[in-house]
Image (cartoon, rainbow, N blue to C red; front, side, top):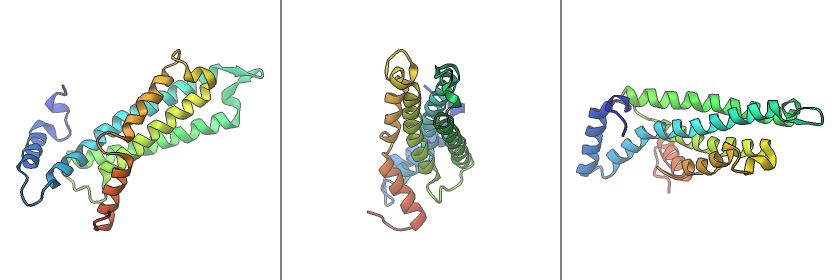
Length: 181
């Protein structure tokens, strides 16, 4: 259970939104969708945590593992892959912070910022864990290393609370103001 003071906007705000969602009425589902949009930065933060953990593990491994007499991080392909993942981690972190701030301060998600944060974080979790497994080579696929489990765990973040395709649909509708089908 999550303590009420740890919820975005507090427990009272969540309870009020859930009550509106249960009422239904003429705006069928809009309150429920708004609740999803506000909760998506939390899911995104979880996905980002997996991406960050996989990155950190791969970075440490690449600094210790030697091939041809030197650490594998000294190979451009490994170093560039880690640089790309770290750059994406920082960009997604800022996107999540923006969406969380908007949720906390009752700002309108006028461009689907909650969905943007979940979309990018979920896809980053998959990409970062896949890259970590690749950096570890065959060892990354074994249960000896945590990146194997992270790789399996990451995929769910592109599926639950709206697939990546649903996130794109929400964003497209928000930015176009049209009913995208």
